[in-house]
Length: 482
Ligand code: GLU
Image (cartoon, rainbow, N blue to C red; front, side, top):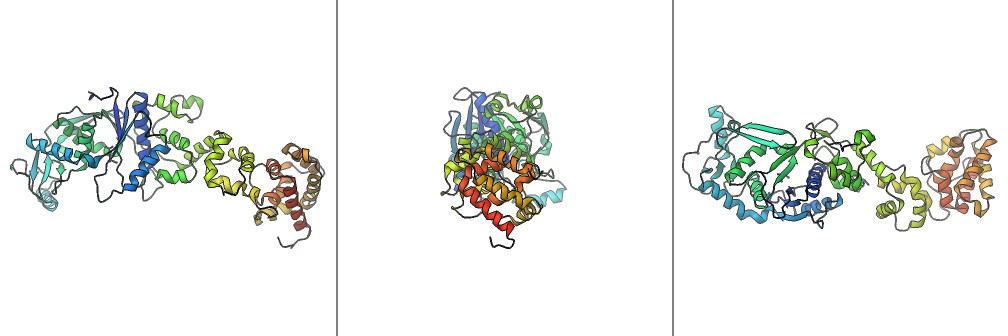
C-alpha cells in the first residue's frame, strides 16, 4: 500500500494555499501531520499550493512559514522538508494530463460551462453527462480535459472514518485542465503528491468528496494511492463551520492577543482527540512530546469539533501560570513600554502570572508601579467611591498610612505589611478583604490587581506612603482636587 519514500519513513504533507491569513483549522491539520511524521520517523513536506494566481499573495506564504514556526513546526527540524511550491511543477501537471489523455483515461470536451448547464437542464440531470466521451476531440483552445470516471465504485480507506464507499455513478467526469490549458486543483494536488512520494494524506474532512476522484487519478497515473485520513471540521458555538467572515480564525490574531504557542498547540490537538490518560488525570494539559508520542488517527472522533475560545483561554491561563518567571518576562517584554524598569517588573511578575488569562493583560495590571515619581495612578472613581463609603474607612486608612510610614526599612516586605494591616484593622473589627480595599485603590488606582502587600513591597516605602497620604488628604478634605 505504501509508496516508497527516499528516507524509508512515511511522507506526510501539509499543502496550504496562500490565499489568506493562516487558519486555526490549518494549524491543527499541520500539527497532526507533524506529530505523525516525527513519531513514525518520517517526513513533513510543506507544499505551498500557489497556483490560484488570482487569489495568491506572496506575503501569505511567509505568513504560513511564520505561523508554522510559532506552533513549533520548524523548518530547521530534520523531519521538515520544503517549502516546495506547486507552481514550480506546472510542467509536471500538464505532462500528467497529457499522459491521461494518451492512455484514454481523459478526453477533451468543447462545451462551455453554460452549455453544460443548459444540457443538464434539458436532460433533467445534474452535472455533466459525458457528452464528449466518445467524440475523439483533440486538444484545442477553449476545450477542457475531463477525466473518464470508470464504472463501479470507489472505496476510500480512511484512517479516521474506516472504509467510505462512493458509487462512481454519482461522480461526473471532472475537469483536469481548463479551457486555457491550466490544471485544476484536483490534478495538480495529486501529481504533486505522487512526485513528492507522499504516502499519507491527512487533511480536513471538507476534502473527503475530492478523495474518490483523486484516488482514481492516482491509479490512472499508475501510482499506489496514499493512506487517507480526514479529520473533523472545526465549528463555532452555533455548530457552524468556522469561517473567515464570521469567526476569529486567524492564528496570528490569537498570537497577538497573548495566547502562548504551547497553549494553542495543546488546545488544537485536543479538538477531536483526547490524549490518553486525560480523563484519569482530570486535565487535558499535555506537553507536545507526550502528545506526539500518543497521537493516533484511529482515536480521532468523527463529529465536528467545537473551537471554544473560552477553553483555549483557560488552557492559556494554565500555561502562563506554569511558565516560569524568566520565560514570562521574556514573553511579555515587547508589550511593555521601554522605560519600565525590568527588574521591578520581574519582582511583581510571579504575583500576576497566576491570574492572567492572556499575556496582553499584564501591562494594565501593573502599570501603577511604573508611574513617574510622584505621579498618582488614575483613579477608578467607582472603586474609590465604594472603598471610601464605610464609616471606618478613612480612619483606618489614616492609621495604616502612619503605621507604614513608621516601619523600618528592613521591615518593608509583604509579611510585615500584612501584619501591620492586621493589627490596625483589629481596632476596627473588619476583615482583611475589606480593610485592604481603600489602601488598594489609593496605591494602585483600582480595586483589582496583584496582591496588595507584594505590590507595595515592590513599589517601595516612600512612594507607597506618598500615595497613601495623598488619599488620606482626599478623604479627609472632600472635594480636594486630585
Ligand atoms: N491547498 C488545499 C487546501 O488548502 C490542499 C488540500 C489538501 O490537503 O489536499 O485546502
